[in-house]
Image (cartoon, rainbow, N blue to C red; front, side, top):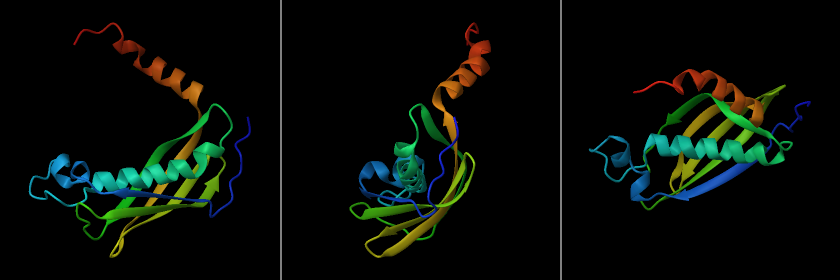
Length: 140
């Protein structure tokens, strides 16, 4: 199947109210008990990228992450709302790249660049199964 061509500028916005579960405290930084964790910000950036094009893919196709670059420039505390915008900036066949911006009520808090690959879900599942088959009979 031929990979669909997406319009550059295709965008998705996601928002999240930051809770205790989203703070650095839950990601190994006990000193930062009420600040947004970078892994949470990164997950929101990935979510926005996935939602931008995955629903528009032909049945049986998904995107998977390849590379990610994130700059978390300003802190956001528990109780604030983070808004993330992922915009398609490049497509080269099955490779798609998103430019990402993140904001809270006080302004921009971060940026990112995320590359994803459009793949056939069934073919990927088979590849994983084949790769991991050596582990099926191992005793750990």
